[in-house]
Image (cartoon, rainbow, N blue to C red; front, side, top):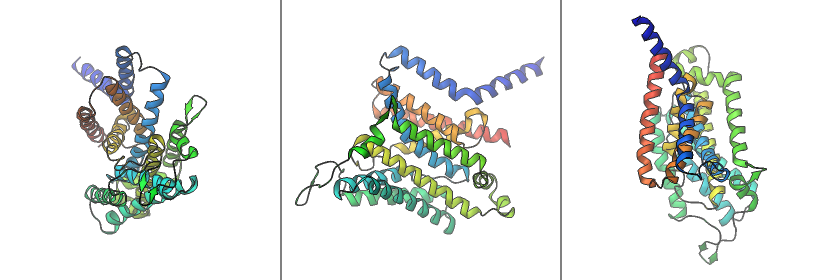
Length: 333
């Protein structure tokens, strides 16, 4: 009898571990709907999707670094740099859409290459190396802007800025296709592409081999350093895409705008460990984690919870996510 009770408890705990995140999302929606009649509206859910799209892309970058056994703390600063790069191209240098997209993407790739250099060639610990790069990147964008945001008709030496945020760029973060926000479709394309890459391609599977046992992967003929390079470049690239969406959504190049998103992105990636009981970083879990955080923060905002108090909630979520990932890892070993 006692054994049956133990087995039943394990079965229930297993189901909670697999579907707990989805149940939490449904529970939050129910609570916020009951307490605020404006929560379950198209306008509000559109805002949630737009905010989730940015966090989820940064979290996707973190996920790629986690999969290969690393950790990228520079995604928030990379998003800030991309935001400034796009805004400067449009407002200060009067460029068109293509240049305003290519420059921040190139900046994101360069940050990824820099992270790969210090972690692979110099063999610095990923956590410390990317933390240092985070400060360097933040310093670069603050030095370039002298601490000022970039916006339409901003005063510069000799008059006002010659360019502006063009409609085609603003459409990325603000536009809709029918009733669906464009960023939602963009987010789904990237996540589906990342999932297919990691699941059905040889290189994608090698990401997981390297993360599970780098030495064994090396002995089996996998180019471990090359896979880690790919992971950090993808991390920088997705952070830059998040920065582009952020700039197009708010219509300005705010300095350090991506920095507050780091904790959200890390928490979403770690929540992904527990989704469906996978016990490892994965794309679908990261997306669900980002949705959970987006709904929670939106509801807290509608409850008039101050932004500084929301950091308490974010920290608590991160502790819980780390705890769940540790439990999942322990169960798999």
